[in-house]
Amino acid sequence: MSQPAATRLTHIHTTWDRRPMSKMKSLFALFIPIAETKLLMFIKKHKLHHHMDFWDDGFRLTIPLDNKAPQKALANLAAEMELGGLDKHYEFVAYVPTDTPDEFDRGVCIID
Image (cartoon, rainbow, N blue to C red; front, top):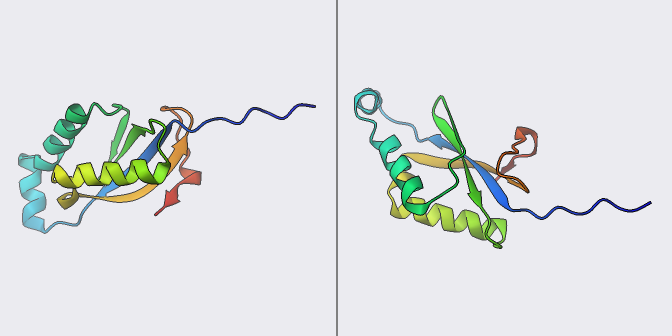
């Protein structure tokens, strides 16, 4: 019997949550979505994979590995988000390395 071929990791699914805000800032954000606008501009600027899921106060963003180690790709993404000012609005929760941009299994999240 032959062994199944090992799949090469090509993408990372990252999950992010909104940082806690005061009630006044939360009300303000309902009418002027600064964080969401910054996030969408960031995605467009860096030409990231647009597979995103929004839920309550967080989102999932899929990024390509481009032959980098998962930790290096995460560090680069975090640095770019900090430069874009998104670190003030969102915090990293977990990631899942996969071989497809569409696959996502919450049961195997790596919380870092």
